[in-house]
Image (tube, rainbow, N blue to C red; front, side, top):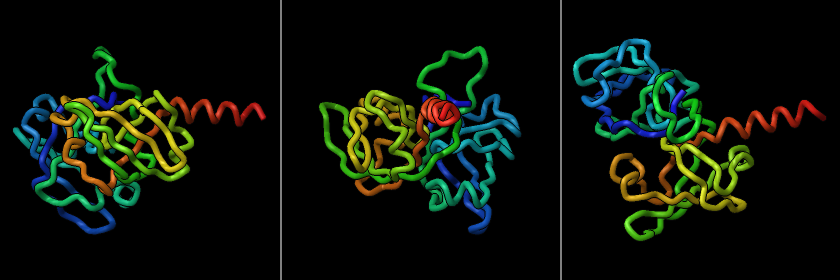
Length: 197
């Protein structure tokens, strides 16, 4: 489980494999200390497993399901990615409950300057939008954000300068694809309500 509070960004230094599966090697010197093979790590919001670990790099394997449901299928060497290690049981709980199970891909519709920050409108499929509520939580590329507003095609989030600086969200451009994970609590509530009918 994660919190959506990005610990660091890393650089994809090697991509190998085919459409069916792929392996990334990620340079992330601030994250490898204490990281062990088998540990879960969120990469752009997708929960992956560290399969190799060295002093400054770690490797992850991606299967077809992950490649088809996230933006990671189009990632290339040299790209920057958001990283977060799994939450420790005795750690502080910032952000919100994030599983690292990407629900789908949205697209940046519009970016507007707002003081030192930015407001970003994101379009998304109805299967995701049904769980998005104003002032609720959503994960965008692994970052826990608060929904500012919702319309018939998507939603808007507001990013402070710190978030723009320490995550990949500051590099987003209009029409860029983004990984989305809705608040798991909304899914549980829906399931419970269905079981009562």
